[in-house]
Length: 124
Image (tube, rainbow, N blue to C red; front, side, top):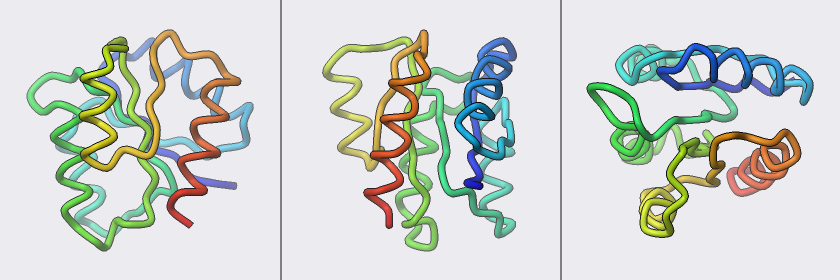
């Protein structure tokens, strides 16, 4: 079973994602802010996938993405961005910073599964 971290400041979204991801056979862990996510990585924890919201208080998901991709010890961690923003410029920026996928809210389980499968294949 793959381990996935969900980083989103919306509790309702976290609950919905937890339900979908358990249906897709993932072990889940939640973070409501960027700082505890970075602290867990720096402490040596390493998920298979991070589902990362872009619009969060204090530190954006794009900043977290850049932080993770600057350190090669996390090269094998797949990152799928999660956002209400569907503008090409935002998607392109996330992908250029090293995101392996992008899912737009509201999330459909089939789309989520496809993005996660594709993202994990990229980091094998």
